[in-house]
Every structure is written in structure tokens, then in C-alpha cells.
Image (cartoon, rainbow, N blue to C red):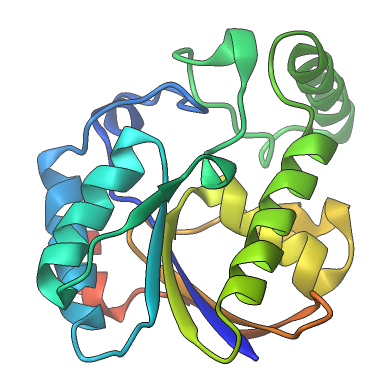
Length: 208
């Protein structure tokens, strides 16, 4: 069995401004750097056999702070980058949770069209990140691997490998910056959730 510890990158300047990332990038804010330092301290006492990060700058910046604390350098992987939101990137972050059903359906359909025309369709994205997790597990059998990734990456990995349901990603949509989730992967590619949204190390930051 391979255990993956998935860390979300720290808060960025765009997150604080309410702007949508996708594959577009923005540096960590001062808060984001504090979050990265906090999760680095939380992970210091744990043993990892390998360390990977999304190739996007915000994840690599978070991974560098963690790496200094645990004495490892993260290997960037393109396959772990966030979904491409196409035309919507840099615009306002969208949240369907408060929409009435009809409005939610219309906005969801619009998002699907935008991703098909200018971004990365959800089905393609989900298959990409699930395959990335499987390949990492095959590369590191019976080892513990640390990954710095994005909200969407974590959600779609859990949906496909833990739930076996691509649509289940909506169940996992809330994930604080620099919280971490752990899963166990079997050789056949299925997964079991060990811990979800560990964030005790962020308590003082979340309260501020």
C-alpha cells in the first residue's frame, strides 16, 4: 500500500482578491506564507519517501517552504496542475452552493461549455489527476509520498479513486489552504480515505 499525503497550497494574492486561478498563477500572500510555514512544522516529524508538487508556481512556492523544514526538495509534475478554466481565469471566483436549483443548473451548463471550448473538460481533468496518483503509487509501492496540489486536484482524485464516482468531487469542495488529506492506494488503483482536511496546525491563522 502507498500512502499519499495531499497538501493544498497556501493562500495567494488572487485568492484574497476573489479571482479564479486555474492554470493562471499568483504568488502566495503573507497569510499564505504563514500557512505554508505552519503545515511545514506539522509535517516535520513525519517520514516521507518522496515529495512531489504541482508545476504551478503557487504550489512550488508552498512546497519550497515545506521542503526547507523536512529536508526534501519537491519534484514538480505537470500532471498535478490545476484544471484549466479557460476564459474564466482571472475573473471572479464562482460559488454555486447558494444558487437555487435552476440557476445552479444554468451556471453549471455554462461552465461545462466554457471548459469544452477554452479550458479542460472535467472528465479529462479527473482522468489526468487520478492517473497521476496511480502512477505515483506504482513508482513508490509501500512508501509514504507527500504531494502539494490544488483544491480541484484533491477533490477529483478522491472522487475517482475513493468514491469510484467522478461526480463525487462536489462532496469535497471545502479544503482550507495548507490543510492536508491522506489516502491509501492499493496496487489495483483503488483508494481508502485515512484523514480528511487536517487543519489543527492552522487554528491560530484561521482565527485571525
